[in-house]
Image 1 (spheres, rainbow, N blue to C red):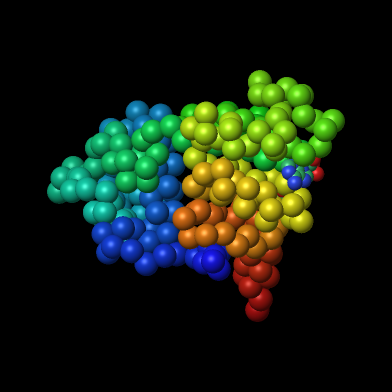
Image 2 (image 1 turned 45 degrees about the vertical axis):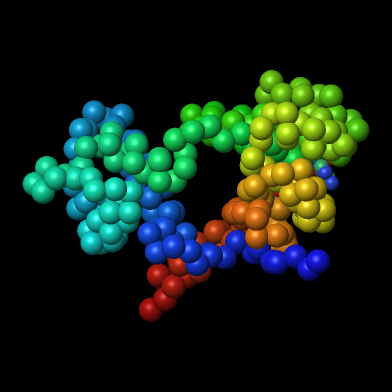
Length: 223
Ligand code: NAD
């Protein structure tokens, strides 16, 4: 049976769901709110959020209305309530277990970062195809062979995968992840993955961001 393509484009759904751009803004609001919470700020207005992110007040109010009827006129939003509501709306008020495939340079840097765990993303298993790496311990986890992928994903209850293999290996590995029951892949390999709709895909490519940055700087410098 031919597989539907999933290239990471937004899907249409019920109107009460935020768009992909709206969900990305909610993540940005969360970052700001967590910063304010650390500074001891108890309430904020939509205007303060809007100003700190350079977007309109109306946009913030519209996005926040998706997460619930929060905020009081003249008082604003309780920071803790808004954080909780956004985490719930984004589905990150729980732990997400992830596996990582391709324990190379990028993976080692990601594994050293403690912030993912603090946000509820726990990497529970590592896999690599290189026999020299299998059995090694990296940041407290033993690197496993790909043949154990299915068993481990099932026993550890992993739902997400981080893919840091070379571009040419990414598609076959992604297909194995799908077959093993993974529901979402964060793909760092610079290639377009084709997967069934049931697997959600987010691509991370810093080169694209650098290209965009260069373009913006060039535009800004134009007479
Ligand atoms: P690396 O060569 O250091 O690591 C790749 C690892 O994948 C190696 O350990 C290798 O043994 C393993 N591997 C290869 N084929 C495999 C397979 N079929 N199954 C399991 N493991 C396999 O490379 P790196 O510098 O860590 O980069 C990893 C990937 O991330 C590359 O695709 C690279 O282009 C990409 N990358 C993306 C960004 C970004 O901004 N998105 C930045 C840096 C690197």
